[in-house]
Image 1 (cartoon, rainbow, N blue to C red):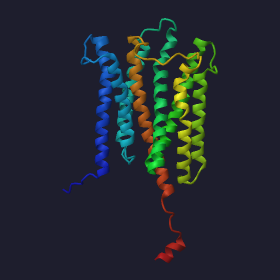
Image 2: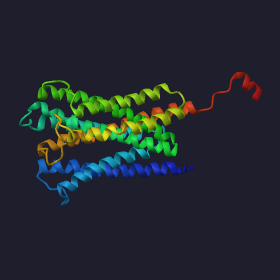
Image 3: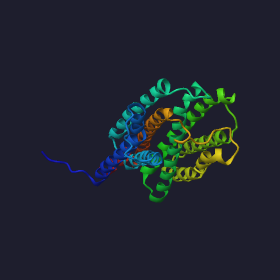
Image 4: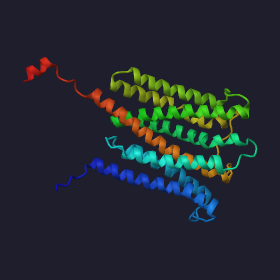
Length: 305
């Protein structure tokens, strides 16, 4: 039988996938498995690493692994990466939901309503991450002109907007019993609303511009400008007098809450990555149709013959 050699692109894609999986496995082990073993098996699997170091490894391992998955995918016909990420995401979300609803105790002051934190906080983290990746793709497209980055930018913006919308809905559900209102023009809420509408505007721009080149350039520039609001959203609770609480970290969250929070964070991270890859494939197929030469008319075909 004749063996088919892999192309350099396929080789790089497989290498990137292997590196991404290794980083994600390390992040899950340090961020979740160690906590599970410590909480329920009373076994120390931390390898002697202090909490701060473990947190950094879990965060950056997960982020870099997801980014390599996104950047290294060739957006080809195979959906193996997407299916893998979907399957892993479902497992983590089931685990996080179970621990969040049935295992973790109610919060001392807010009671049962606090359980929405286990999806609200991971949604916020990953929503901002999706828009950050869109920002990076916009810069890469402007400098390299590779349509892959345009497709990934569109997918990242769409997923980021969806997560932002879900974030606002979850926040409203949490705000009603704690603040007494569904919505307040708090700095964090206001800047988040501005962020969602800004990126919705970019999606509308892409919808109404037919020329792929103009659409890619204009939306990339608009994405870079709109991204200015992302750090404002993140730091708004520190810069202004806000009803919204400060960002959580392992020192401000009780240990019984770590497992559902981290499991759902990984679950939404994998789900976000899968949706971006899936949506980018749709965008790439549309671009291929738009950039393909027009078919020959019957008269032109006759002349050619």
